[in-house]
Length: 505
View 1 (cartoon, rainbow, N blue to C red):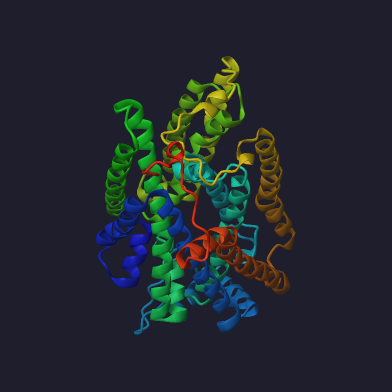
View 2 (view 1 turned 90 degrees about the vertical axis):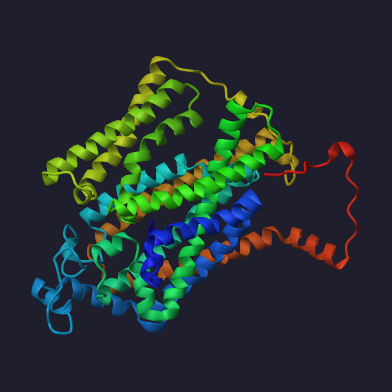
């Protein structure tokens, strides 16, 4: 949805055609290469995304402008009166097209002194809660996260996910600090609807780089969307092929049949993505609207899934009732609050912060309470043994070391991720925002420190995400080089009973 809107804005391509262009790009290499192609493409795409990100941050704060320039302009914008904003947003003949609330001009409601440079923001707090609940939902409910975790080495997955989270944080943090605030500081005519559709980075990049910026953002967007779409295609195809087709339709299915079903599902799912994007567009929903609604729709699955993984007494029926019941309660709350606040239920009223905040909170809290009540009333006392007895279609253990099966190593990994995972969560979600509150409206020095952290984070994250996979795969690259040049020894023949299966998903 967001990708189609951006392609339309940058190139003029019909938005419905753009909705299908991106899925087809995903279908081609995902259906052909499977999970391995997804991993390889994701690395290449991520590297390109971070290179563009670093260029954007560097251009805004080092090459074209400075922290002082952005700071002074943001403070000036927040002091503008409605009359001044009207004169700024006017056509060549002097007729103003400014409408209050449509453009980021003048003081920000519910912010300290109306400033853009503060963490004391009522709207920011509400959006932060919505963001946390919604992203908890995407991580717990999105099969692609589980798929990647299962495919990775058990002894190192925990570190990879924590490092991946810290690297990912660069994208909203650095892009918002650079392109996002630059759009406001430069007073580019970007409407709230365009901002909700995700068009701020393309607009600012086009202003800074001209046509090159449009191309750069289009490439960055295509890399991000195709990488995500590929992972989702593989995830959905695995669910259908293994959990539906093999479990209920053809229990005797072998590798080739599973592979065929997976490829068919990838194609169908890709087409469905395009259809859904077109449908949402015709309903008048943009990326921002869907993003804020996300937690209301899927946040109710978070606590039941957490309990099922971490609590031996978690009740299975209670998890199902909690997830569905929490979602229904959240949807009802969302609609009721929108009606009570605005007097009517429309796309615009349902997209406001308050109804979405209420829906998100009810989703995650009510589902947890429902599941806990079921589990306390009838504890299941699950021993987790069946998880280790899941039958594999193909006994492919390539890339796994002996330590990956040792309980002591896995227990140590669990303790490590619990310690550092909770630590980083508390620092990022609680301590960092709280330490920023005493600053009130940021001073120039405080703002300079903030920008320095975002720039440093961007460069370090880019280095890590590009270099670390190459470093960890050094032995593989050496083996390929030696095999291609004939400098290495020939591999030992594989015994008949040790042959790897011909089909690998």
